[in-house]
Structures are given as structure tokens and as C-alpha cells.
Image (tube, rainbow, N blue to C red; front, top):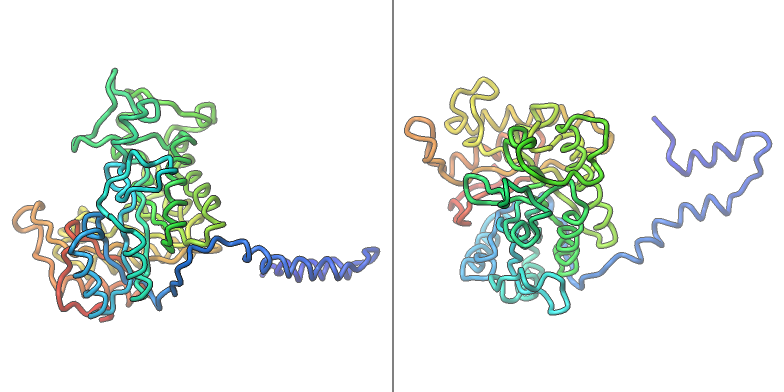
Amino acid sequence: MSAAPGEAKEQELLEPGIQPQREYVSLVKELPEQISRFQFDSGYAFQYPDAVRGVYVTGHSAGGERFKKLVSLMDETELNSMVIDIKDDWGNLTYIPDKNSSYTEIGKPYIKDPKKILKTMEEKQIYPIARVVVFKDSVLAKKKPEWSYKDGKEVWKNGRGESFVNPFLKQVWDYNVDIAIEAAKMGFQEIQFDYVRFPEGFEHKDESLTYSMGKYKDLKMENVQKRVSAVTDFVAYAKEQLEPYGVKVSVDIFGYTATLPEAPGIGQNFTKISEHVDVISSMIYPSHWSSYFGIAKPDLEPYKLVTEYAKLEKGKLDELENPPLSRPWLQDFTASYLGAGNYKKYGKAEVEAQIKALNEQGINEFLLWNAGNTYTKNVDYTP
């Protein structure tokens, strides 16, 4: 075991010919306390819960009548956290920022009074997490085509009509980090970055689309490694920039990335991203897996799928010196699009089975995904 910084300094002082400098040693020990005094204070007081048990909340839900229902759900159950869209899947802010903000023109009045919502969450001690969708951003791609990918003369769109911006560019990093800083100043205790990746299947498009590789262009490595470097570097940069605001940083990541050295198209490397975050949130919805772990139809076996994933993830995280907290996304929706025989209706038993599987593998935190924010009733969230 390596010595702590203070112990190493004491050992140096005992070596022949080195004059003791005890005042210097004590100064080093005092420094962290002094630095903490410069931490930003949003004015809200939140306690981190015993374990985050949270739900996803859109801007419309946070700013509408559904918010009251979700607060009641927190009151009546062991749920205690909300992941609220602050920058949504299209690239809009879900609130109108201050008129001095650089982001006023992308603000939408979904959440009319963010302060009121945060005040309610403070009173109820509901842990507030701001979701910031990063590289999927149709609004920014349209405004700044040079920050996106061109297919001929047009900005490239995927099959759902969505555009992405380019993780190779520092301007794109700063654009998103500045939004995250605004969320931290508002009072959110954690920033959760989503879509921290290149578009799916990018390994098949990287030669045909036109885009800048920025400072990564001349690196002596394959394009796959360049993408991994860009995505990992963004996460490390965001974490560093958010440090003064005292917020935790989490990243959503595809569950299957833990099964691979890296996902070749999208640039996500589970281990490398995990080294730079406080929390890693793998999206492990049973419906999203093909026949992994020897399970032919994963959506039919939520307990088994989550158990097998959690075992695999634990092995990956155990290899790290300072592993992040694991807080996976679980499924609280029915994946009927998989077709008859491939899915089941998800309700109380299926949600509890996923949570139980995590708990048995030593993972006590989770988030529930339902796109419409309608969560199953009468679930035991600590089964």
C-alpha cells in the first residue's frame, strides 16, 4: 500500500541530510480545508440520501401537473431522487435562462419556475440531478453545421431525424459544460451527462461524412481510438470544470460497453469513462439486450439479466483504483415493440426483480426510466 501524501513527506524528512520542515508539512494538511471555503454555494441545503433511488423527469413533467404526482410518489415510497431534463434530447434548455445568459435563445418555458421546483425538492429532501444531453443536439447542429457532420451539403441526420454535434471539438465541450455550470448554480447537486458519445454505427460512416477531427486529427492512432480519446477527454474536462461548484458528476453509458474493450463506433470505453466520474449509470434495460449472458430473450428474464450484468460490471470496477459509484438505469416500461413472445408487460414484479438483483450484487442505487414519467404503483423499492 502506498503512503498517504502526509506520510510520504514525513518519511522524506527522516532521510539523512534533509532538514525538517514541519511547518510546510502542516500547511499541506491545512490546504484542503482552505480550498473548500471557496466552493460555490447555491443557497440550497441537500443531504445525499442513504442511497439514490430515483426516477427520470422530463422538462414538461417538472414544470407541469405531473410534478406534484411525482413528489407524492417520493413522499409515499422509498424513492428519493429525480433526474430532471435541463438540456433535452433535441438540444433545448427546458427553462428560460437569465437574460444575460448566452443560452437564452435555446430556452423553452417548460419549467417556468426552476427555483420553486428546487425549493420544493429541498423541503422534501428530494435529491436533484440535472440531466444534460451532450452530443445529440439537433438545435446546435442546425445553428453551427461546422460543429456537426455533413452528408454532402446537408447536416447529417440519423433514422429518427436527429442530428449530433462533434465530440472532437472543444467548442462543443465548452458549450455543454457551461450549461452544466448553470445547472450547478441553480442548485442541482449532480450533473448527469447523457449521449456522451458519437452516433450509433459511426464506424460505418466515419469515412463518408465530412467533419473536423480538431486536435485529434494528427494523433498516431486508429479512428476508433481517436473517438474513445475524445469522449473520455470530454468527461475528464467536464469533471475538472465542475469541481469548484461542489457537484457530483455522473455519465449515462450503454450497458453493453462493459462487455467490450470499447464500443468501436460510439467511442465509449466503460473503464476510461469510469475513471473520471463520481457515478456511472449503465443503461441496463432488459429490453435493450440481444441474447447476451446466455439469455435468449432478456426482456422475459429481468432478474437474471440484471444479475449477470451486475457481476460483470463489478469485475470491471474492481480493477480501478478509485471506482465510481454504480447506479444503473432500470426498466419501468413495457417494450411491446419487441414483438409477441419477446417481451412481457412490466409492472411491480419486474421492477422489484431488477432492484433485488442489483441489491444482491451489492449495488444499492438505481434510476428508473419511463419516457412518459408514469411509474408503476405499489412497488417495494427496497425489496
